[in-house]
Length: 128
Image (cartoon, rainbow, N blue to C red):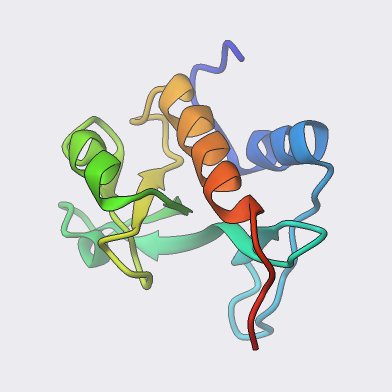
């Protein structure tokens, strides 16, 4: 995409253009948090939220946007440790990864992991 840093707004535009999905703001108490989900099965393929860096095990207390995406355990091990990729925040750390949207993750990493998550959550029906 040629982004120097993937911003929240660029991520929303990418999801809209690539998958035809819009962000859903589900929690009144967390107005900056939204999910991206499939239109058919309603499964989440990404959660975007603002989190303090120290809550992610990173230095500093400033707020950063992070996107959690689904990624199987075999692949997640190859991404953890790449710039801007951390264990998921508030999700299963075996099956989800966190990507900082502060410019530290390469734009290709962001879109590659979003595409992977979309594909992994596409099939099947939602239970419950």
